[in-house]
Image 1 (spheres, rainbow over the protein chains, first blue to last red):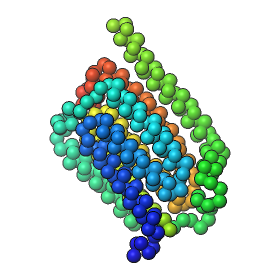
Image 2: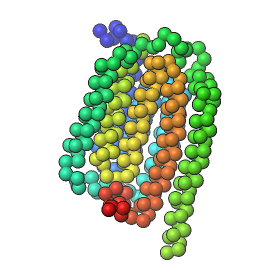
Image 3: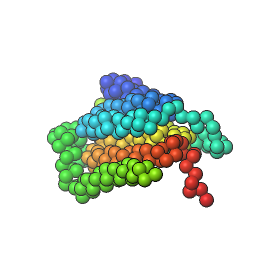
Image 4: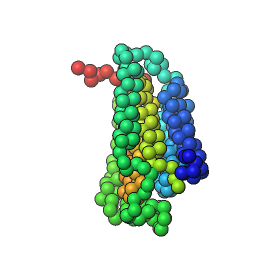
Length: 185
Length: 101
């Protein structure tokens, strides 16, 4: 039934991405060692990149692997090893009574509500709109995204440049001020 | 034909739920940052799915900006974690009780 309605390769790609994403995300939760949690995070990020490619977001998939897996997770690993953070000692204590059941309940209600909204709405049938340019056809995905970023979203793009500069300067100041106080002591 | 968009949306909802549960229950600030990344990726997946469904490149442009903001957030956040660790020798958020009333 399903295999006749949808091509088998796309189902295989979806199942692969779903397994990568869910296993990696559960690994981030369950693993005690922060280094292993960062490696599980890489698994999830690669799964999201697979899902991006399956939905014709080629440029974003490449950026996902380069920026997230290549830069952000490496930054996490740098900090973990720089701090020498070992196994977390505080996860077995529970200062707030019933925190985990309440968190599980809240998450279940939220996710269940989202899925119920999806099931009851009509615009998630998987059909693409008849009007407008299709993303996968015609000019490439990179061309389309570049045109959108440098015309429609030009001011937001310039603002991200300022944001990145502010973030870098802030990180440098955070590190330098600590060193100055240590020398003063 | 591609699989329906609802499958990817449900997958993104599950990923968001896992990240939210981890953010609410884990104590280490580093693990909490990773769970925030999980939630951001779930939102990115939703954006890309709707960009395909509605044939609108704006969804993918939004993901582009979310990635930039996530990179800036991780840079500053990890800088704060390092600064706190130098002073307190711990990354557990339960021990940061100085501003408690």
